[in-house]
Image (cartoon, rainbow, N blue to C red; front, side):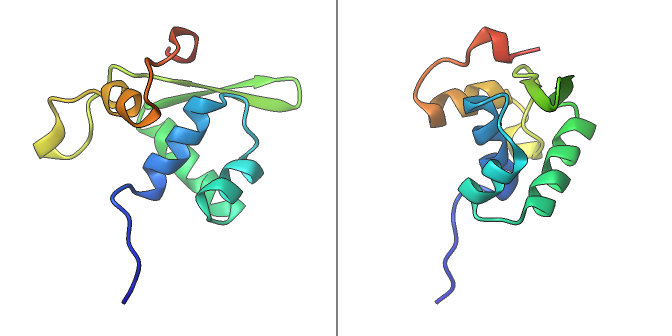
Amino acid sequence: MQEWTFLTNHAHVLLCVVRDPQARLRDVAEQVGITERAAQRIVADLVEAGYLEREREGRRNRYRMHAELPLRHPMDRDTAIGELLAVLIGTRIDPDQVA
């Protein structure tokens, strides 16, 4: 029987970045259980969709989430991404992490 989870890799990557806005993609990939290249593609997807902003700080990137944006699926459009992540993290989203 194949294992599955309720959250996608996109959700897991976003959770990692919200928990640590200066996380290295190598570390994110390891936590999620994907390759570094896959983590890069996912972050690029999230930046392109407007959920994340990437800002260069020295040799590292710092990520900021746009928590007010709705989830993408038509059934979930009434829920902001920040609301979902707050439930999963078990705390309010830090305003410094929100663009």
